Length: 321
Image (spheres, one colour):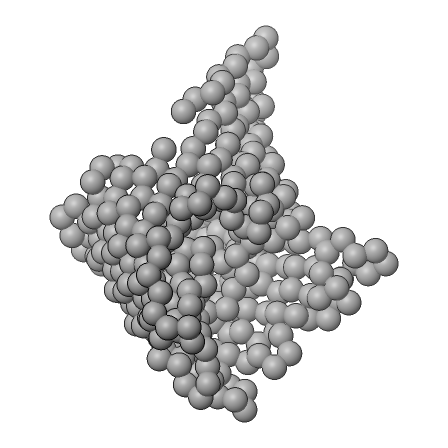
């Protein structure tokens, strides 16, 4: 919905719009320590949200932009993201021939790289991040994105830790390199975090590939999660997404290889279907199961919830506006 389109005495033009998504699904979870659980959940296939975004044409190929996006618990009317008013995204930036530079609370390049090759889009029961290590968002972040040149694109991210007397305290850094040529695309992504003392608290490195075979696409990803003390994992994702009639079938296999002495491996299999009723409204269903080894306790979640057990089935509806 267009809120404003202003043209003044200069060449500058601006536009602001309101957008959003409401998602509600019935979720049946099993295998948890408290027993089976049946619930109505907001944000199964995508986090419910309302947002504001805008651009201003500054002339000479330069544009200003902003996004303020709030997560909503549509089942209760509450706010998600720990109660942050604009917890999903909050940034301002500039676009131009040089690429894009943005500042604020934003998605990390590593998370976006996983999302790109996950047929479930890091949502539904088959969400790859049930097992794969990543950091979804970073605060106080500067992110530079290059234009695409010869099929190559890149991102660099720096999150200020804002710890007095220690510039490395709570700092986050990330990067992403991508290449696309015809039906093939490849990616390399990294994200590292420090604790308040400046000690490495997490590190994830992802290599991924994707192939569009016309009737759908298939993907493969390998993630090394070895930055935090006592953590040394290798994560593998194999996925496929196939459009059929008015919908899309999704399936994936995710394996976590724990290389510590605990050897707490896990395997997840997921399948799902989205049926488009229109360009904005869809019905969906998905199922996933995790096989935990040696005391591992990974759970099947959704777009915004971690889940309570090692298996889950969900069915729901989402509407975009």
